[in-house]
Length: 517
Image (cartoon, rainbow, N blue to C red):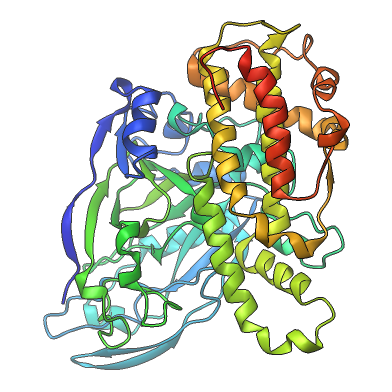
């Protein structure tokens, strides 16, 4: 049975959509949307695209050719099922971080094939471009000759372009997606905080701002590079902008996500266009999908927990960010808790002989998910302090320094969401011996860097054309430190953090009258 399409994703003109409307209609409702009109002034749309609307591969090779990138290798033809009507299989397998190896048996009306998926390989951008050009220039005289070919189709994914080329301003993050706690944080800190851990470098990701480049197959039966069914890392939001090319998206709402899992909720469907086993995935045929063809210069917003599979219908370059903030912080915690319980279950039989069973669970959680409980709690503490700092920056000598109800309300709302999440964490940090000295955090330059970045971001949410630097001359961490007494100076538990927020925010919030925590 084929995939059931139940509707299309809504489209909006970004020039006619306010930030408040975007949050109300899509972020708070956790609904996807395609937005146009956000990429008009992007340098990438000029430099990276030829006059014919194709990827400007020579530009990448000339300007970024020495960069080392991670590339998924896809067997372009050998894994296809060619049926009697000579139509190919709709999907291509390729390696992802979740599937380090993949062995599949391809059974078709006209025969059977087996293959092993290839590992992700590292190569230079120049070599990647050379492979793309060589592959695109080849043609197969017939479907059968294509079937016998073992050519590799390459998909460049997760290129940390912004980090590698900070002075080349390829694009500006659209206003709707700037309240990005994840990348603001990673600009100042590492996510994984265990300094003694051997896996630290494997766990930490420098940022979640990526460039993707993928081609379609240049034959009579085209199947492009693609991404298997998945929900995004940390259950974050994501946005993806097509600089050139077209993509086909299939999305499934979180309320139906259980339908793509097996009976034990352990593994999910890999390719929704395959012959999915009804025995293994009994609910799959009940799933109702949303479909979207994303055109060039369109941006799609994918909310938390939406499973999706994406295929490049043309040679495509896209810019992609993962991000979370106060609105979906609870999704991150729920995923961490789920993955923690699974990690603990896998090693439960060695609990009695393990000197530090809980520590081992947390190390495994960090490797599998990208952070663990202490990492997430430290993240929340720092963002709590940064939000309190924003309130402090609006107040001078117990008077409103700047009449800015948007900033006050926004930060108070953030703190309320944080309090709600940490209240669910109280029982899960007791065995970890956690302690963070708040005043030491405030003295670090990295914290001021985070506060300045947040201040600039929130002022631009209120006024997109705001150009001034964030003023830290009148309010520094000394003012903020003064508002924290010794009883709140150290955080041992989520309850301590709630007390700290209440202590500082209540005093500051009262100055704003109607703004409540």
